[in-house]
Amino acid sequence: MQIVFTEAQLGHHPSGFLVRGQRQPCPEIPARAMVLKEAAESRGHRLVAPESYGPGPRAAVHTPRYLRFLETAHERWQALPGASAEVIPNVHPNGRRAGYPESVVGQAGYHMADTACPLASGSWAAITASADTAVHAARLVQAGAPAAYALCRPPGHHAFADMAGGFCYLNNCAIAATELRRTASRVAILDVDLHHGNGTQGIFYRRADVLTVSIHADPANFYPFFWGHAAERGEQAGEGYNLNLPLALGSGDEPFLAALDRALGEVRLYAPEALVVALGLDAYEGDPLAGLKVTTPGFEEICRRIGKLRLPTVLVQEGGYPSPELGRNLVASLKGFEEGLRV
Ligand SMILES: [Zn+2]
Image 1 (cartoon, helix red, strand yellow):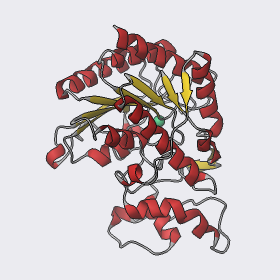
Image 2: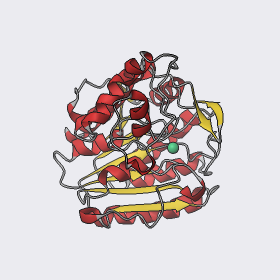
Image 3: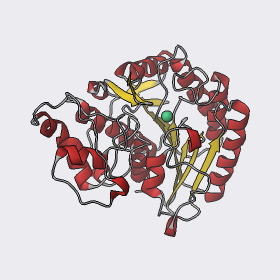
């Protein structure tokens, strides 16, 4: 399978975030992308670099003022007296009833859901390279490849049209799906990351042309808390085109695969012309975020079943944090997917 990757994504080094009020080192580090790249390369997958697609693909998903904020916030923040090296929000518009502030401090609170999406000097270049990686994989599939894997970093599925969160800035899956929609009348996004794909859900919540399905740890007691519940089924034209399958914390392969079969049934019923998989590997039993207990053979089987859909597919890297098996879990996932395609 073609692996889309560029080292331009490595210039983003978030230093930390708050977990239960304590500052912790950020696990979404450049090294995790290198581990995934080297693991894929070692199994003979062919690496290709993305082209630069300019502002068009991201502007098709995100609002102008959010994009302006992401691009300019770091420089404006640095001009403030006593500012930290990274843009980190500390004041938020409760319920967003307020107007849009001029201040970059106010805008940070408006556009950032949490402290896990700091912006430093190299962030914007890495964020746009990550989006270009997703676009390039979508273009490969549009050009006839049965599938392509976008090794995107930073990840994207927590990013809404106008809000960053959970290590995510631009929604790479939504950008890939929007690219695919240029030639496909219906696209499905299947999210198997440990966390609910809240940004993806938010972007397509009122639309019927992109089905969003997410399997994740129950948000009643897990990030992103405010979204991902089973009752969220879409609104207006999108009603019935969003499916959330929350799992009890600590669930392993068996409940995950049962939820996956339900998700795949929903995708088949929708009959999309193309598929985007939000391929998080953080549901792994040894992942430092410790929410679910999927095993390495579990990932292989998950991706085998997804491959059996035999849809033109863009696999987009989402979460999956440093553990000794991170690379192995990607290799198992790609192997399972390719076997599924061949069945
Ligand atoms: Zn995740």
